[in-house]
Length: 379
Image (cartoon, rainbow, N blue to C red; front, side, top):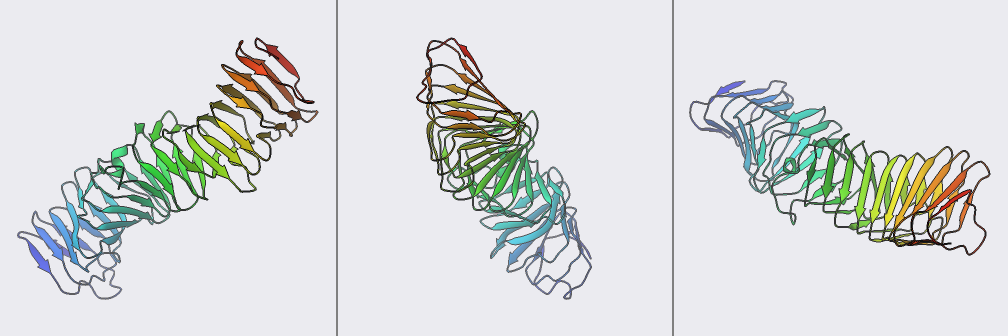
């Protein structure tokens, strides 16, 4: 059905019989309001003007929802907001939330390049990827339940202040394809992945993972500037910088699992019931002024791994174990550093130690396995 809105109008009846496969095409510059029950399952396209929903009316049974340039979907007068399937929109299109909640069910990959505005919030469901590459101004939270939400700027997630516009990872993933700094906190209500594309850098205020696992993937850099709390982190690729983050794990798994990349930990308290850092791929670990407690190994390397541990402003007595075959661990003890760790390795692996300057100290309290020492410090 094509509705050509030459003047504002309201339809309060039942739109489409139950299971009807037809769709709605809204044309004309005026507003058309659906105020009744909508049963149609075809696509909804707003080519021009405004399509409004009011009361209990929703279009969650509709197929794809598309907004052309300068077209608007307004849900501000609904009772509880609405769910839409596969939302797409051209640059210059608009979704008006008011105080309501918009749930986007991404059954396939989709791109929305318009603006989402209002005091309401956005929930992403469905296994498809949804890309927000416009400048949004909505003030509420963003929650990812399923699939991936792709963003290229902080404004993709709206313009709210950090007290009510945080990002909630509720089972889905965040993919970042731009460089930006955000003042938002990130909360994990389930295991979740944040991916940053190659050559991109994205920084956030704090993360709060609770008992869930946070995975950093992608070849770019992710920075957490102001701490938070975490119990299990995996670095799959790229760089991850954690500043003043408190990490505590009672799990049997390692607190920090590093598959590949660069892990920077600056400040903060880190404690683990089992291994602190478990390394399974070539990587670099930089520790600067970190308080460390571990009941297991402070660092453990698996087979065929080449890794570098750099220490600065650091006292560490965490046990270090290179248990794998054909693995190499290079340790650089830098400024104001005392290394008092017991270090052990398999016969097929190597540990190299570099005491870089006169404020670098190595304390040996018992048998330790080090193959090569370059000493510009103190033993």
